[in-house]
Amino acid sequence: MTIKSGSGQACAACKYQRRRCTPECLLAPFFPADEPKMFQNVHRLFGVKNIQNLLKELGHDLNQKATAMKSIKYHAAMRNKHPVWGCMVEIHQLNCQIQLAEEELQAVLHQLAFYKQQHENQLSSRTADDYISDLQLGMAPPGNSLEAHSHYNNEEAGAADYNINYMDFKEMNNVVNSMCGYSNNNSNDNNLNSTVTHAHLVMQQPPLSAVEQQQHEDYSEMQPFFDNIDDSQSYIGCKEAYDQSSLSLESQFKASRHDVEEIDENELKSAAACFSLTSVN
Amino acid sequence: MASSSSYSNPPCAACKFLRRKCLSGCVFAPYFPPEDPTKFVNVHKIFGASNVSKLLNEILPYQREDAVNSLAYEAEARLKDPVYGCIGAISVLQRQVLHLQKELDATNADLMRYTSNEIAVHHQRRMAYGSGVRSYNPNPGYYSYRENPGHGSN
Image (cartoon, rainbow over all chains, first blue to last red; front, top):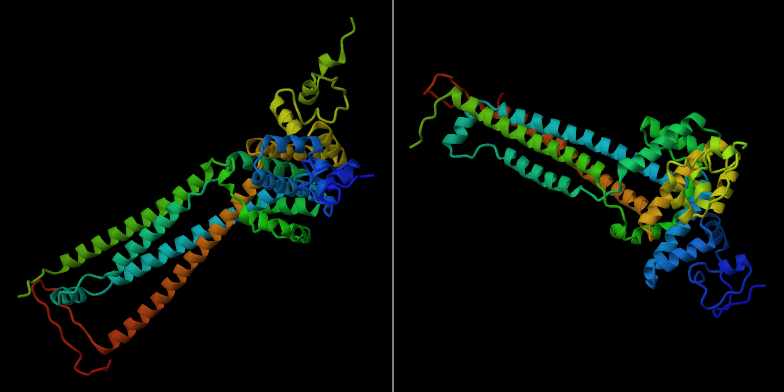
């Protein structure tokens, strides 16, 4: 029989363990009596002793403890949902989404550069008369290239901002890749495993199966946790892979700008060579 | 002296750490080789050997290696970051996805603007060249400009 604590009801932890819930119970603030399943998941994965040790490690900061317990609950819930891969499912899906989005972004940037090139070609295909008349009338050369430069300056700045702190992508991807490779050989009727493996291998948008969609619905209460998460305090610091990808984006912008500058200069030179300029008095 | 069975099978990292005899049916042995003791130490610190053993016994044998690898990764993440663990990685990745999506939307909008601008400029040119003609003589030093005598005619 669980004796009620000061709050009037034994916490889910003490209820599960069938023991007295004292006011000093470490787990009571984090496992209310109306969430027995949450505690069962955590207990199954971590065990009471390990949770208590973890809370003791965090000292007296209540916010940190609350955040840690939220992450532990989510972790345990994911492991309960996916006994084999746990949180790696989510990580893998997000990696796939990132990869797809990056590829799409590169494709769109290529298209944009192509249209830019076409536009510049069209401008330079104006007849020499147009240049002369513009010069005689004191008009400036086409200003679109200047606008394009500033446009690309802005985009280049945006690309620099793209350099986000990221975890050790290589290490994580190695684990995920090795797991996917192993699972591919041994995939069973677990729909989620085969879905994730397939998505990883063909690099397509991972189709959310009914299981995954249900997972997202089930964990909708966890979303506010992610909205408030301050992962700047996370251990994640290495940004190797994303440095490379952001560098490639920046270099692409620089290359496009260089091409535009070259075209302008060459076209002007050829246009000037076609005729000699007469001074306008 | 009879040779001990432990000579042919060195104890796995788990049994070595727990200081117990590594039997032939040890559930940890295939996944915690003695060459990598850190793996089991991390997993044991966060999850506990008995919990891991129960978890492995609940899944099929061919899935156990994946499960152990994911547990090892999660344990390492939790040790590095006791507050967020691997959830921090998920959060960062989610934000990256959002950021990329925004970049993609902005770039697509640029592309749309550019292509619609191209169409507009092309249209304007067609209208402009229909109303006036500028002639050009490539002879150096000579330039003439004539308007089409018929306004608007083409």
